[in-house]
Image 1: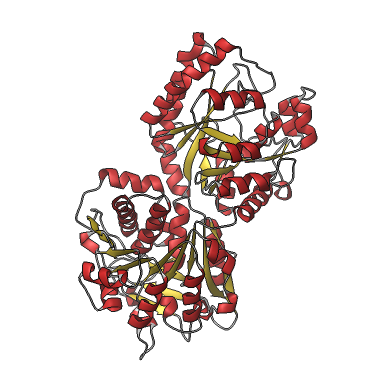
Image 2 (image 1 turned 60 degrees about the vertical axis):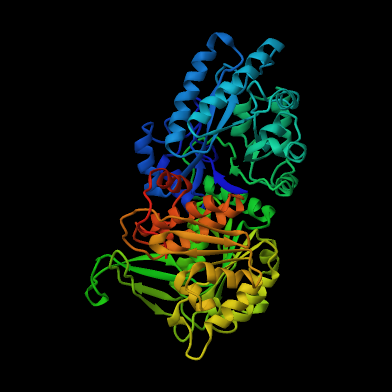
Length: 606
């Protein structure tokens, strides 16, 4: 389940006279601070109507549009063609900006959401016949449709929702608050119709105000202004039970934090919508429980030279970025919409503070980032000599905080329940991190990835990285590494022979990153190779971590290995074309665009 934001949580609405409208800049700034870089589009015109301009803005803010709320009067034959034309116009915009879902409300045909509407059988037949046409329009733009039961529309009551479910096969947007206001049971829908749910809007609702609206004793807009919708856990909706049912059903779509509010005036900092959204975010994260991707290992603050092709002695300015293999993989997974966290440690210094703030900004849960007061947060400097020379200078002496993680400090419940648990070879280079890493792999019950991640400079003389790589391989079921790392671990440089040695230890999948030749994956049934993708290389650092996060994303989605490999290879190629690691991690739309237009056999990932 992937969390996203919605502009209506900041009071942004298409309804005339709704209330004070916050600026797009403020909404995006607060969403980024909250780590919610995926969001719905809001009303037409909130983002630039020109899709190209909107894309530029989204890239600038590192925000992804995941869907949009679209209304249409679908029960009236005389205006149906006009309604479908407007839906097609909005679907075209959503498709260009990379959305996944068209969230469809069957509008009443009246302004606002106060006037009740009850459809007759003939109107129902017209509406139900229109839904396949909407789905066809959406499909042509790469969108799925999810019908949104919404108070004040043609589908608002428990009875109308039941009829929709019984007489159509259209997917549903489960809006917990609107179902509650309409007299329905969101828990029952999540339990009994999980297979129909394509999209979720999470909101709680005040029980007394909801009853007043339902019984037409109070107008909908007035109730919203009085606080009808509440942060998760503060109202009458059994939000914990709803989320439990969605988790039980392995719902893997978007869960949008969408608390409709109406602002009377510009809010003060003490009364900012951001505070309420943060409470809902924290409630949802706590009840979703398990992570999609939980990584463990190295973190750093990377300092990239802003002068390309010169040695460090000649560099005059640097750009700061979050780094470290395990950390970058978590960021990569988060950018692809996965709920991600990292187990690591920083020093009690300003760079450690930066790491936590940056993780939250990327949407990565930072609760498992510990502090070791004895050591400083690691720094990494690099030189950039495209296309293939990027020497690193590590400042991790006498040791790094992330190497001091002990067995007793492991969040074992989180490790056990994560769908993907990811470790790296650097964590094996010294104690106590070595024992903690191996025990963590034994504890995990989901997919257990081990990234060989061999950095010779981080191993003390006399240590045997091959021995510990093989120990990790015995505990993991997916092994990832480049050809040099495969040779380090197995003594075999040939990918197929190296994979055979690791499969013999119990691994289920071995993935070899092959640079210019692309990437290969091996199982006991055989192997598959995908070619590299042509990009202009700027900096190859972080490309392998982007590959890792994307590979985990694809395997969580249960893609066939060739598709997962191709997606991961494209993600790595994108990062290779940019100057940074964490800041450069791509969105799904960017990866898909490169796959659609990419050319084979050039810059791969290392």
